[in-house]
Image 1 (cartoon, each protein chain N blue to C red):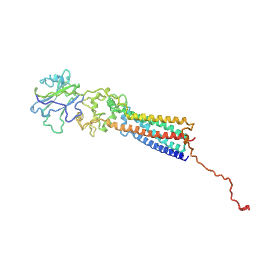
Image 2 (image 1 turned 45 degrees about the vertical axis):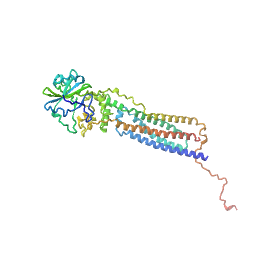
Image 3 (image 1 turned 30 degrees about the vertical axis):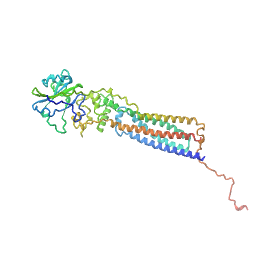
Image 4 (image 1 turned 90 degrees about the vertical axis):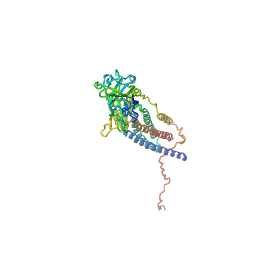
Length: 229
Length: 256
């Protein structure tokens, strides 16, 4: 048994490292160096079934077929590869991951028992890598820590109750209401006191009429003709 | 007599000045609301398709209120200079009606702004985006609006692509999670409109998918819009309040 423990990919940070039916683990680079002839399989098991998994169960058998997962098959084998697929050391900049659950075309196809199909339940699951030479298990890694997938919550769980009304809106409403009330009161007071000149009495003023001054000639002044004499 | 004449002239001057300011603000309010109604950020289809169009209604009211303010300010200036009781009474009553309308517009804008929380958009998006059985036209409009929004702003979902994972959605009913952890519009697309790297997008490798949410792209313009209508209207109304009080005082002092 090798000392490597498969784990969810953390480097680089992936947005889809766990979804509702898939998860992403690192490829086992530089782990199976001594087993150049082996085929490396990924074993995906329900958490409770991990301890009872029998390494001699062959891949592609009904007992390890993906299509029977999770009942009655409690652990399936998929993603087989030779050591050549996992060159060591890993070149910089390369994203070396395995996406468990990416094959959607063979989920119901019993002729493809090693299908890497989407996981039907949120788990939790444990995975390990198993190297087989022929049908003989020669090396295995440790089981990973339990991996639980995301469960989608129903839409009704989104609370749109809101944070209530913001302070701005309350301020606008109250102040404007007060102003409108004052203006209406002013209008009423204005019309009520239309007849009387109480409030504005002291400051009444007359309209700026155009004042014309008519010249009154009280004495008819003529040019006295000199003929009086 | 001379002293009260001076006071009268000062009051007249102030009222004319007040009305001039109201007139200019009315024009400014009309211009601002026309700008908002012309939908510069392309958000209106999204808001209208999700029945959030009331902020737009507030802007429409703002246009007409602005024009009314301008017309009434001219009426007010004439009334003050001629010291005509009838003109000023008409002016005051029409101004009060305009005041009430503008007040309604401000409060509508502010209230509906408050209701546009991220959760509100999340629920509508998840419920209607790519709904396979569009009961009404609105659902395909919502899908188009969201696609345009996500393409233009290089964003995904409301709070992020995790919206599509954390909640059930109409999209999820027709698109399997393994093939479509999030819609293809969330992927970085090349010139032909295809994802630059489909695997990279599905894995969520940064650079191949848009990891930020669209809420900022929505709330920024909506906030500006709502506060522009609400607060500017509020300022105009405060100034109008003072001018109206002054006019009432002036009116009650005119000899009839």
